[in-house]
Image (cartoon, rainbow, N blue to C red; front, top):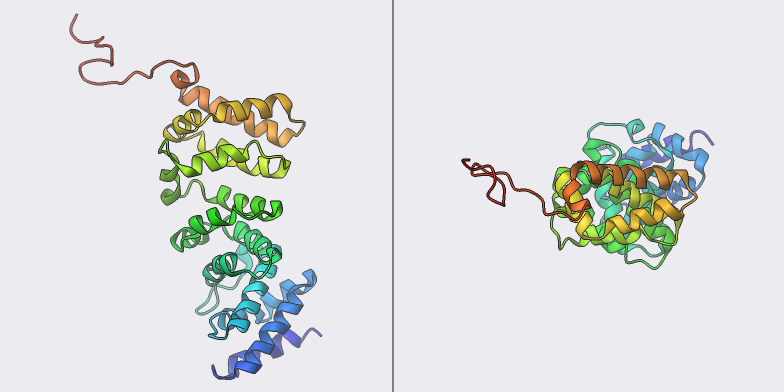
Length: 276
């Protein structure tokens, strides 16, 4: 029924906070509707998204979980720019509940769908900012430890959309960075789509000279050359070629095994360039 979402939205809006049974039922109905791809647009357009923004703040755990999972399902299909942006109803409202779902999920499907939606949200600057400010990078790092390959890949794809954020990129400069090791390691994963996500992030990072140096010292070149020589995927080959080209351009000395020169007023590290 086309009016079902409108009715639910009005009920949630009018219900007092202590009407736990009614609010839980509304969240479960919206979750059930969100399982149907064709219903997701209607939920956003007809007030269901606003209702979920209210329900997700419930102190009843079942209501909160149902509303959050509905967010995760809806966000897979909806362009982040299409959400309403008004007081009490904004895509920013989705971020913290989705990150919490990664930690508290009852099953791997919830984690997978939460990551897919976070990946979509992370294509918008204000939502990237919200994900990072809410501790999203650390939560996604922990999600990578999941045994499910699909969940791993989905988490990595979100992280790939965050790597150039000002508060994230600094994590890749240190030679002891766990993040450098994570992305270099996943460049050699068995799953092709995981390699595409990891190598895409690496290619992006290689355009930053300081990060490129850390990646070289973490043996990223070997992984990229393996991709270039052995893969059949044009997407993978393009990413590897782009990354290697940036490394050679910005970190020539390191790539050729030479000690980089250090500029100073007195000359380079060998003492040349002083006075005659």
